[in-house]
Image 1 (cartoon, rainbow, N blue to C red):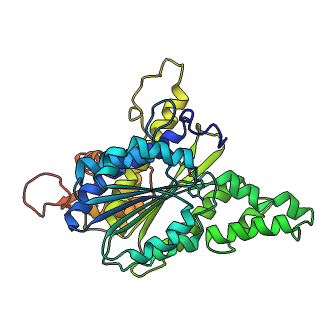
Image 2 (image 1 turned 60 degrees about the vertical axis):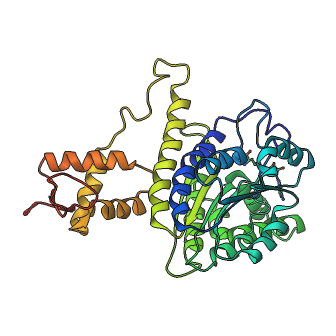
Image 3 (image 1 turned 180 degrees about the vertical axis):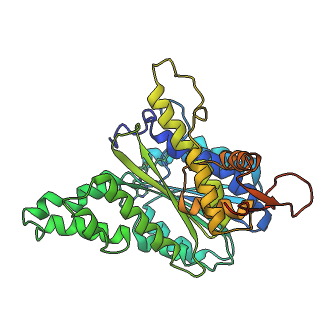
Length: 373
Ligand SMILES: C[S@@+](CC[C@H](N)C(=O)[O-])C[C@H]1O[C@@H](n2cnc3c(N)ncnc32)[C@H](O)[C@@H]1O
């Protein structure tokens, strides 16, 4: 798989590229206002372009940075493969000459080991997209999670789920081979990457569905990340798979200290996942060119809005949305939320206090349920 990875982009890879492509411009537009130098680190960078010409993460990152923060960013692209490092250096030579891109031939873990030591007050974005799990030890990201909360720090990490299952080696353990040195090394790697032994109860459970196991692992992993410093940060994950019902390839997880990232990522991940699932499902059918947003079921969202507004009355429309996506991450877009709020107001199932006195629904209106409902 690794040998042919860069020949052409796998359809499911589009999910992570789209997340990055949609998130970067919105993120950079926001952090540019902080006025700090911006450091963008892609620790498993690849050659920047696939053989079929499609852009890899370094190009996606550079395009957004050139457009939005041209004079204020430094992008660090790490790769341990000489040929890929050279290809990237050639493709990005213009930006390298201008000292905005710094390619490094080396090991991600070594570089992550020292780079945090030279960070001061910069805005930092860290992208980790390895082939498997190696190089993504929790201790490698911990110094970033622990940075002073006054400084903007964001992480996107893509963790392979089949490799987690393989390293857990459940069948070998069930057959009594957990003391085998290879299995012990596998388990140690899982513990290092996931930041604890909690995976054992989950991945070694013979009765749990593999998909459920992955959901549980990622939930605890996110909890661990957001709780490293007070006040807690924000995190969410997007599954990557070929089509609905097919095996999970990986989970893309983000971490940020800022609530805005949760809102932006909710939209980016919702769109990337559902659009790709729709494309895979409709390929070579009459529905091939149908927009993924058509026929989306939002009745459940209306119920969610009413339940949340009942529990937390008089919250602003934007704060209620944040509460909803904390519990239902990636399921609906902000556009669908606004449309559902409008419909509920028109149907007189929801009322609003017009804080700004504009007579219209906006982010500041406070939402509550009509008396007696
Ligand atoms: C999944 S690919 C990344 C693809 C890239 N994000 C893109 O969109 O093109 C993983 C890359 O990490 C590189 N790599 C693997 N192990 C590494 C390590 N320990 N340190 C640095 N790079 C590594 C591989 O050579 C490969 O280019």
